[in-house]
Length: 279
Length: 260
Image (cartoon, rainbow over all chains, first blue to last red; front, side, top):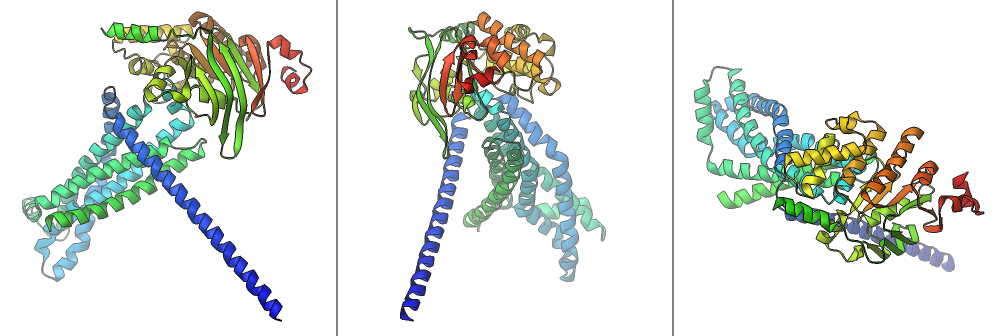
């Protein structure tokens, strides 16, 4: 009987030990993969920094990318911005009315849009449109050996493909956000007018009166970081796509997921910094 | 001054070691994960020579030329191109050396978003720093003329057939006047007539531009037309070398199977 109990105890001890070894090995291998990915991203960022102005700047490609990223996103961003303002007003106006605070609606809409909703939602919309398209484009170029062809011909694919796209996103996302914010104000004004008449002058005067520079500057500054994150993640995922057509889809998908997470994280950091600086 | 820079860059391409060996590979090894693809590769390519590397699919033929072009880093062994050891070169030196190596990819690897003209201008403006429009047009037209595709100058790669894409890829590669050409399965996916035309074009251009070449293929008519010497690869090693006629009479069944 004692021998049997001893054997059972020894066996369960072996199982626990085996489980510990398997878990330790899984954690180590995940950590290694994570560190390798971080290392690759740091190296990619370094290459980006080193190649911005190396042997000139690819102005034509940069302008072409500004057109693709910026101009071709105008309709999507404009409609989204307008609807955000319109819906936000429709949702909040009845509640504000209950408290007799209807006159604060323009100010509330302005602050919510400018500080948070505008930059965040437009950045996420741009992630879906731009990061996926950059990820798929560069992924497809990688798979069809076009990037290798640039490299072996001594041209600089980082400067031509990566630098131009990241800088175009960094510049265009803030501009798109400002435009979306403006259209959200218009949407807000129309939203207010669905339940009564408020003149445009009154609405916009009240909206702008509620805004301060401390609302606008941090909100605009963070959109540059959002734009950079969208461009960087899209380029990184596409540039490091493995061979095979499946990897093109994976690169696009992974670019959207990662860039979205980056934007949420950056937003949380930006809010903390803004609070520290202004409040 | 600009013309001087261009000429200087082109003069720089005329560098051949005294022994005439433009590529020297000794005991080259390369693995991917646990899979050892190149086990012990040894090869010398002489100036003006065309070597064809024959082997079954998945034997690592393309890996060898990717190591030569600096696209992959070997695990072990010595790899010298034009007297310079690839592993010891810094980024700028490697970039400089790559201007002397041309690489024709299996698919042609044309840039989809550019026209044929822009594809050919791309290396000229970035590597040779040529900005003059007339000079660019002249060089692009000459290059396209040499592959018989002058009319395709304003077309996009999606408008071209497989054979035309390879010709344009060849023109884009040769426009920098490389000393060494690396061809990765230049006739794969083409009909026999176009494949023969491409093979003959490789020989014509090799004579015109005096290049040395390594041609990866398993297309025997291409090997017969282009090869000065054939190397047979199996299981990560080169197992035989000789002319087409010598190897076609080999008693080794594996080698003989290629020539049946």
